Length: 361
Image (cartoon, rainbow, N blue to C red):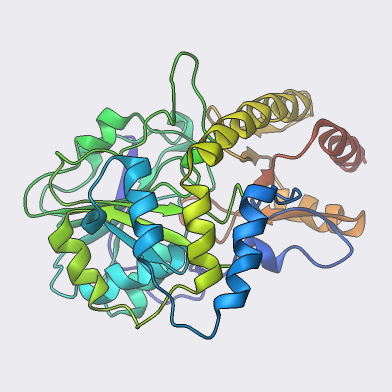
């Protein structure tokens, strides 16, 4: 069996902490391999409009230009785009607006905010736990046929697995809302593919599909809070009705417009290519360490590893000046898992040298 379906877990005190995120690990003074946000100088084509927008703060935000730019990027009409204050707001809107959902299912391991938002809105959530022995691959047959809300990440945080678009599309059906979190889609690359492999962002033929996107990861905009939803116009109107007025700030809207431009898309592809090389370097170094197993075939800006006693290793790393992401806050993982952000080869070399010393001690 490739996954496990469980219902609402009892309050035993051992449940994963869904509210724990990588920023809690990144204590000032540590080298941050816990947060998946890319840190690099902001290009002028992005910085200039964001800075210029500061001169317009007396006026209420107008989302129309950004909405048009995002819709053009993905080949959809503007009414099929809803701008949000980061992907996290999108999950809250879904949870609050879709209160008539009867059987919501979240595919894990994945980013914990979708489930946290559902639970906060009063939903009884069920989980499909993917099997690490199978590389955390998605088997659509594991999702109950009568689930009327399904949430899954692609590529999935924290596993870095990129599921085939066909497997995701197989989950779509009338009467079901299928939410695909593509916050890291712009980090992926595949030989011979011109664009983001396995993305559903341009698919308008799948019933009930909602695609969640984020602009905070690749462009280092976590503090600005900007993302968006793509989906059927009627569904987005329903979600927009649950959104506060002027939810997205004027500087964030300027960033959305800039990041939807052809210049930005070309830059994303170049960044993804460099990231792939840096990821391969990190995976090679990790794979040579005793007892360390890299999960699956990493496709994004982070790598998941398994090593017995990883929770103790994480503490030793902190003592040596390195922050990595704990795995036990993700349903379907546990204390023997760590997530490591991909950085430049020099940083990865320094990190794996320290990790090797800890493992050999």
